[in-house]
Image: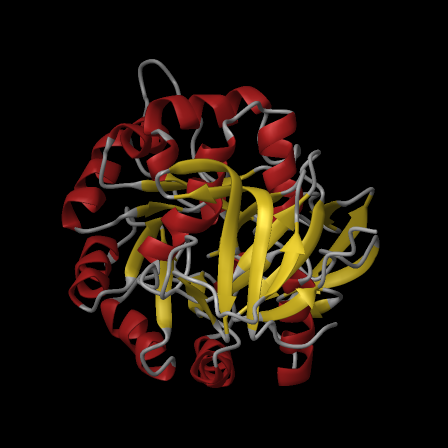
Length: 384
C-alpha cells in the first residue's frame, strides 16, 4: 500500500481513452481526480511498455477474499471489497442471494451504509423473485413471485442505494415490478427466468434493461423456441452480463454475444462468491453449502454452478488474450458500460479530466501491475 499520488504523471503507456488507445500517452493525477494538465512539481512515473485502463466496474458480485456480501459483517464485506480492489475493481455493487424477506431487508440496511460511505456503489438483489425452474444456486423454498409491494419493501430498506433487481419477469407481478423499478430509476434485470421469447419482449417493453448473466439460468436458444436469449441479444435497449471465467460460458457463446450485441451492450461481471481471490474449500452461499474445487464453485447438493471465483483482471486478460476481443472493446465492457448503467459514468468508467483517478496498470501481457482508486495506490506498480 502506498500514499496518495497528489501530483503524478503516468507517462509512456498505452492509454485507453473513450476515443481509442493512445500510444505513449499519459494520465495526469491531481489529488483524487484526473487532471488535464500537470502541476509544475508533478512526479513522473514511467510506464513504458504498459497499459493504463480505467478502473473496473463490477455490477454483479457476491463476495471475495473469503468474505460474503450476502451474510457477512461490515468488516467481512469490506474484506471482500478490498480483495476485488486489489484485482482492479475500483467500483463494486454488492449482490445478495435469495433469503427471507426480513433478512434481505436487514442486509439492505447494512450494505446501504457502506454505499453511503463510498465503499460500495449500490446493491443488487438477485432473488428471491426468480423462477424455481431456473433457480441455480438459490434456495427453492425461499423463492417468491415478484410482488411489487415486496420489491418496494426492499427498495425502501436500501434507502435509495438499490441499483438492480434480477427478476423472472414471466412470474405473476413480474411486469408490474419492472414498471415500478423503471419508474424509480432502478435497473430491472431479466434473469433466472423460464420466459418465452414473447414474454421477454414484453418485459423489455415494460422497462427491463439488463440480462443477468446471459445464457446462464435461462432456457437455451432453440430454432423454434428462441426463448429469452434471442430477445435479449437482439434488442438495443438491453445490456447483457457475461461471466468470462471459462466455466460459465464456452468461448463461442461469448463471441456470439459480442457479435450480436456489440461491445457497447456487454457488461463483463464476476458473479463472484466468497472464494474469489481466496481459494478452494467449503463455503456458504446464502443458506446453501458450496464446494470450490479447482476454482469452480458448485452446490454440495445437486452440483449446480454457484457463482464464480473470478476477478475482473482475469476476465480482462482472458477476453483479450484468449478470446481475441479488441482491448478498446473490453475496456468498454468492463468499465464504461456498467458505469453508465449504474448512473456513475460522470465519475468513473473512463480516463477523462474531472473524473475520479481510478485506473489499472497492466503489463504487455495484460497481467495486473498496479491499481489506483481516487488517487491512492491500492497496488503501486513496481517496475524495477
